[in-house]
Image (cartoon, rainbow, N blue to C red; front, side, top):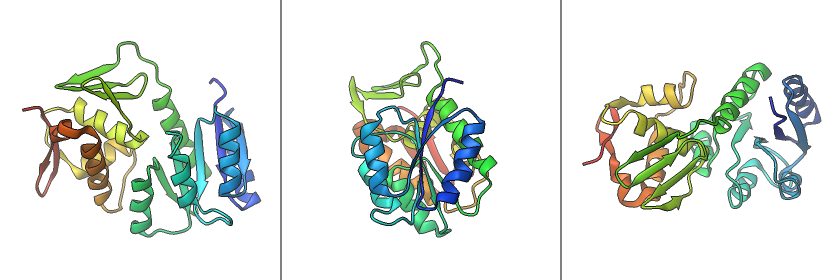
Length: 225
């Protein structure tokens, strides 16, 4: 693969080494930071970071605040690592714009598989890979969404969810099916994760947000009146 760069942010040197060793074995370039402030410095210095692995509990600046700051200037995919298994924390993470949420302890091999999946999708180059529905245009190659020609800023997971809806136009989709298809693994958390993402997508798309119809008690359907 082309050498992709991953920023590993964790206050535990041992954790950074474990994750870094697994990533290096997959030919990823690894940049380390021991806290949120240092992570932001790395991001400002290097504009070629392809993905961030971010621990929650850190000194100086925790993962939540670091994520908020990163999202002010970058849409880089973020995987959040945490020792907490609280669904409220998980929903907060998605609301802040993270793309994956992994609870410690975890398998480094699974973490790398998740990273591979995200970077495969974000770097997939298919010509003419554009979905056009009503006033909405979704360019899967450049990860650009426009409404009436005006670009709309979506997080990586919001973009993936919108693509999934558009590619399944007119089909009633249960929350379970959406979770398994978009999140790419069996998900046993609260289905409000989807509702949170849908709410944000609708808000950002303006009138086109009405394309996402709620099917009460089941899930959603994407259709243009």
